[in-house]
Length: 472
Image 1 (cartoon, rainbow, N blue to C red):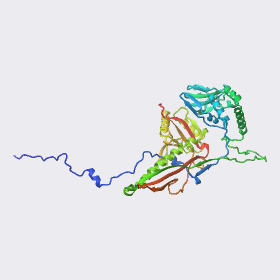
Image 2: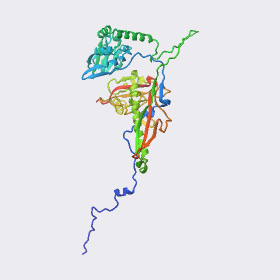
Image 3: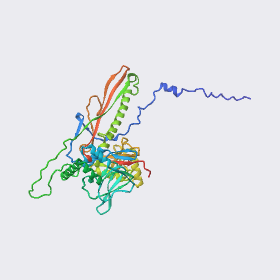
Image 4: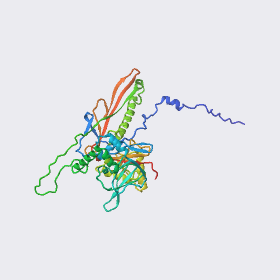
């Protein structure tokens, strides 16, 4: 009887074929170019119309505008105590250009700090208007009476706003509106008796207030609704009346924007540039990623730079606060009411866009989206809402939303750059060879030149104090 013999199984450790690790030594792997997580869509850079700034400077000429002091006031805090910065009191209409710093110090010390709970009135319609009130922190609604006697919200006042400055001049006998706290509010209050006392002890203060009041009355009939010098016209007449003569006055000191700069020195070792250039050029990839970083910084500066950044250059009359905290459809409608002439797009942090979507869901609304340059993006009233992570989010989870009109022809927001510069690599950006040092390191100077300008105030509006972390 023949006994069947099973073949021996190969040992587990015996290799039967070439390993992939060894095979990779003879193969060229398929690889990507270097990736960069910090790269964003940079919608602002894509959509701003860029204007050539020859000479590195761009001047914005406007019609003459009468301004008698209108701004926001800054405070300092020590623990729970709040104090107005004395020089900031010049933001008040009647103290603009007042030169006496010592008197302003005395005036700042006379303010009394008050705390108001949500729903508590800071001023009541019809009561004596005998207080100047500065809002240091919190949000309030300015409330008036509508056409048919109903209560209506005239404006939302938040950090840095103020009201009652007529008390400085003594021109208002009673409040023509009410102001009610929406959130807990910290305010600094100066009553009329303290003002009268200071007027007696500091004669220059009283004289300055009186002179500004006279100036306000003088120019009251010389400006249109936008504060610009009026152009006298006649219309609807018959016969041969004497026509008014007029001229268009210009600002005598128009603002000039100098091109800003972002720069870096790119260093590449000559050995890397010589020997490791296949399948990708190492110098080209290093330069590509460096330029991406420069463009990201450029967009950040266009949004946040304290001199020309859009967040800092919106007119104070073009800034509003949210009505309740989170960004609602009502808030975006109010923003559209400020930039109603051909608005181009909203710009918001991605978390703000998500918060707006949540508010729409809460109301049973679906804002939908539009096709924008081949991209499907959310929109409101047909205006695209574009993401921009350069608009910051504060530690208290608040941010801002911008709405703008763009283009020089539409008197909008424009970008500034200069093309045709030496060694230009991209418009407004150049790459210049510097040297090769004694360690065989090649250096290139990479520079980007840019700025932005708001041609007229109503081209840009900002929704402030947008809460994006509130639970609903």
